[in-house]
Amino acid sequence: MMGRIHLVRKQSDDSGKVESGSIPEIVARAGAEKAAAEPTAAVRTWISPLAGGTPIRFGGGAIDGLPEILRNLKPDRVFIISDQRVFQLHGAALLQLLSADFAPEIVLIPEGEGEKKISNLEWLCQQLFERGITKSSVVVNFGGGVVLNIGGLAASLVYRGVRFVQIPTTLMAQSDVIVSNKQGINFAGGKNRLGVFSTPVAAVADSRFIRTEPFRQLRAAAVEYCKNAVLLGGVHYDEALRFFSVKETFSPAQLDRLIDNSLAQKFEIARLDPLEKSLGLMLEYGHTVGHALEWLSQGRLLHGEAVYHGMNVAGQLAQHMGILSAEEHKKQSLLLSRLVGIPSIPNDISVGQILSSVQRDNKKVGKGMAFILLKAVGEVHLHEGSVLTPVCEYQLNRVMLEYWDALL
Image 1 (cartoon, rainbow, N blue to C red):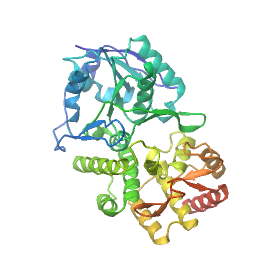
Image 2: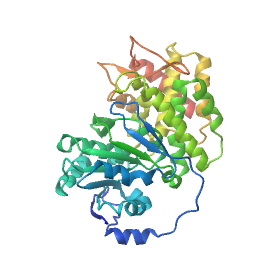
Image 3: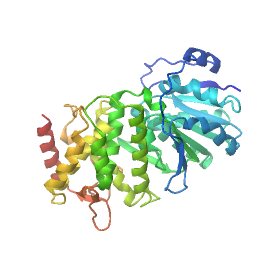
Image 4: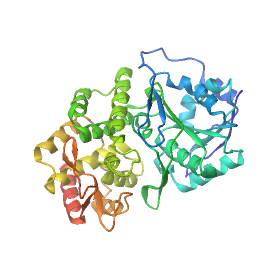
C-alpha cells in the first residue's frame, strides 16, 4: 500500500516552494541509492521513567521496528505529520518501510521554531478531522522538535487525545525532546506558553537520520548534553569533558555515544520526578534567558545556542548572589568553552528586551522571575524546597550587562 500527500501548509510568508505529489513520484525523485553502510550502535529499547512509561527504541536501524509497533496498535488509519525538508530527506524511506501494511495520510507543516504557533496548530487539527481521523487512529510525528511538539499537541487535543508515536530526526529531538511528555506551542510573545502533558505510545530514535544534519545544529544540540552533565556532575561531567574537541565534526560512533549518554542523563533526572513538575524542572537550567534569546532572535540563534548563553548568565547570576562559588562556576565555564564557535547574541537585542521577555517565561511564579541556579556542579540550589529561585530584576539586569560587556 502507498499513501499520498493531501496538503502542505506553506511558510507564514508564503515564500517557500512546496513540493507535493503521489508517493511513487516522490520515491522516484528521492532515488534508490543508499549511503555506504557505517557501523551503528545496537538497537535497544528503554522504558521512560516518566508517567506513562513510553518505550523508547533507539540506535542505528531502530526505525525498522516501526511497522511492528503500528501493527500492534491496530490503527484504522495512520497519519504522518512532518515538514517539507525532513520529508524530502527521509520520507521516501519511511513510506517504503510502511508500504506493506499501511497507506498513511501525510500532512506537512511549515518548518522552523517560528511556525510553532496557534494558527498552524488549528490548521493541522482541521486537516486531521477533514482526512477522517478517529479515536482508533495513530498519529506519527516525524521530524525535529517543532514537529514533535506541535504534532504531539494536535494528537492530544483531537477527540481529547488520540495515540501518537514520536520519531525524532534531529540530534536535539533524539537526545532531549523524546524524554518528555510536554507537548506545546509558542503563544503571546513567549515560548511553550500553551500545551499539555501527554504520553506518546512509543518513540523511535534512529541515529542514521541525524547524519544529514549540519554541524552547527549538532553542536547546538550538544549544549543540552553539557547542561545535563553540569546538573548531574560526577562521572557525567567528566565524560562530557572527555567527549568534546575543537574539530568541527562528529563521527557516527560519537553521535551514537552522545545519544546514549544523553538518554542516560535524562533518565536519571526523570526518575526524580516522573510528572515533570517539581525536581524535573531543573532540566530548564539556562532556559529562562535562553528562551528569551531564542524568541527575540527570530531564528538567528538555535535553541541550544540560546541555552548556552542562558547557562552562562545563570552561572554568573548564581555567583553574584553568593549561591555558586567562583571555583564551581569555572567548572561550568570550562565545559561550555569546549563548544567552540557558538554564535554571539545578535547586537540588536537589548538587555531591556530580554528582561521584558523573561517576565513572560513559562516558569514565572507570582510577580517575580524564577531561575534554576546551581549551588555546585552536580547540585541544584533549592529555595524553600523548590528548584525555582526568585530573582529580582535589578540582579538580572546587572549580570546581563556584565555578560554583554564581556561579549563585546
